[in-house]
Length: 308
Ligand code: GLV
Image (tube, rainbow, N blue to C red):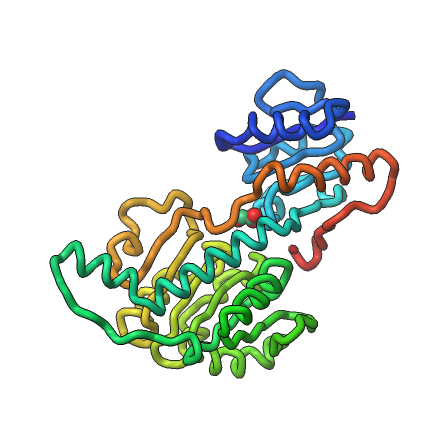
């Protein structure tokens, strides 16, 4: 019985070292080295090459090493195998810190001042104040709940939208398609934290942006697939939206020719808002590995019908 790590970035050795340090008795392999495919019962994956999961005849668990699992559902993976994802305090705190940093940068005009500096312009701009803004969290799961709490500590008014009812202390909630328009009408800064599913692909589009108040600002830290890129540019250029900060894109790295790169009102970061920290996350992988061996219920199971 063994774990295989399948990912195409440079972090494969770090994950292997962390898993071995946490439990030296578990055999752990990189998919790039010679490994006994019939002994693999858990695959720890992140944006793995499509089709690789079908190589393992005795696979019993597919573990995403991140919060998202959309890249697994896109693959032709063995359909009956349970899928788990990461739910981690550090991941949630990192995301919350990033979003709050972006919000303050927007309120204090830091992006504009940087552009002005490069152009030699000295031009104080009016302040925006925390009390004047309602932050709308689109998708209130493990990450959104922490963001909501942190926003409240800074004095922001926040509200959430989700497909099903969520009970988050102090957070006014809007539920389902029927309540989406009221949620949007009262949101000045929209933060997308939705999982990417068939129902949420392309949700950040012209029709949705049109329901936000004039001057609203968009923060997408979920997946590039949520956004219709041309609609965002059109709604910013028409003046309806005041700008956007994006961490995720349809294609990563984003091709140099993409209009986002040169747009003064689009602030880009390279999918770094919140990334699993091996030390923080490895204990739940090990815990699930032992649960798998004992036939006990796995932590953080994903629902294939919901897609998250
Ligand atoms: C990052 O994008 C994650 O899903 O953890």
